[in-house]
Amino acid sequence: MQVNGSAIYYTRPIAPYKEGKICSTRLSGGGVNAIYLAGEQEKQLPSQIKIKSFCPAGGTQVKLLGVTSPCRT
Figure: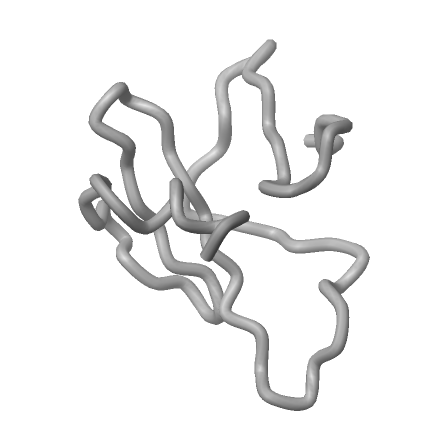
């Protein structure tokens, strides 16, 4: 919760709400979170996560919570 709490607390779910293992929330300031729900046997994230329901605008910064370098979009 120390790393991921900001994607859960003080957010609202947004459509499409859930796509496969991804849940979507919006921060009160306008940012969007995509939360990956790992299975019990998953010990690490997959090398690629594709989200078909929305695409960030050009120049948007995409981050993985707990990691300092931006993700590639």
